[in-house]
Length: 364
Image (cartoon, rainbow, N blue to C red; front, side):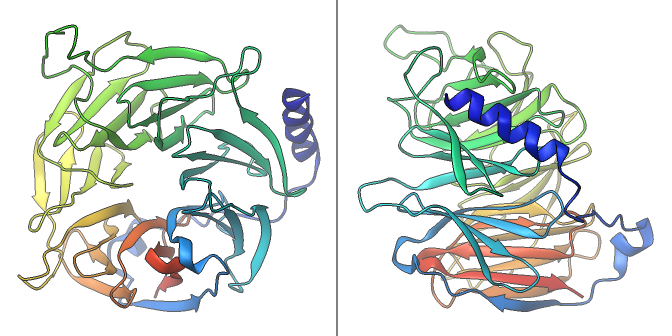
């Protein structure tokens, strides 16, 4: 029944006319230098203030923003007005956080949420219905021993992958939701031989597919490393970037560049070469010495502008990679930033964190 509801939702949304959402493509000149400041457009009042925001995701057209909370709730926000849309799940005090959200790459009416309770759920935005939850029933899978911290789709939607506390990476078929590949973490009890390309040795907090190469994705976590994977490989990572201490959604990819935001006091924001695994540059993130940087989340806005935030300054900042200029700051008033996202085109961004603080800002 659940699978049929998902298939019907996909077919119904495909048949409907477009909602009018479009992605404005900026020219190279615009990307390089037209932004001068970051202005907060909306401070969104949310009813789940006591439960903190753990995940944010703009729709492919940038007109809707999905927000995931510490009690499992999922709320849709209208970006232009800052008004509240559908509540996809109201949450519960016994539920764990919705740690990752991803809109379906082909069908923007479908939102997928993953949580620290090991559940993956599919929601129909238009009907505000949960059309499928992956559970232990039949051939569908629930990850009962895992806290899922990260979920992402490949660019062609053929697969999606999850990762979290148990350090394993599960790659699911994008149509049947069955596991296609299980990238197993090292088993310390079995004395598995560790190599540089072995799986993660501590929990994983970030997973991102390459935006244009459908087989490539990256992961990062507490073991001070980012690993580059090819989903067709049965066991080992393709390469390793040593150093980043990832504690949240702190990895992003643009072309052959990897952005990392680490929970460390200094040199927390860094740019890496995906092909050589070498450091391109440390990106200055201004912070008082006694506070430190301590970043949880990082995203590309454009090729030359990045957004990052965390618990050091309790703020998020947009920074020009070429000039190292800070365009602006969104402060959460002594509350840690736990999630950021940039809408397609990079002009509109969202910042969320402890206390349910949500800000929508615009690069001008």
